Image 1: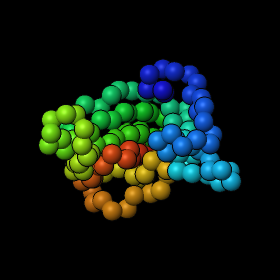
Image 2: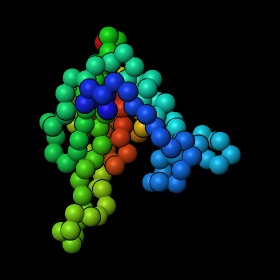
Image 3: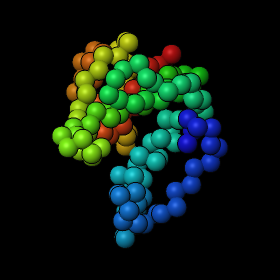
Length: 133
């Protein structure tokens, strides 16, 4: 929503079972969607959308900028579709970043440490790539 210029993002279902989008379980414990929503707020607060990233095949991405850092959000869209019906599994894609990032985080805010230099493997789960200014 931030990349599209939407000023407000409302999450309608705090507890739900629709596609793992519930923020809390029936005992009001935080679930992964809660952490993803919270981390996105922390990372993108005071940022502005720069562009859609289309530099690499088989994945999608968004670029944001803050006064103190540049942020890319990337995920694989490479589809294993043996039947040609548009359904299948998302395949991992290995990419080379333009420079070594300061940090890489999972969608829920855990630091990714299993990459080297500028080589990074993307899956269907978005990652945040951060370069400090």
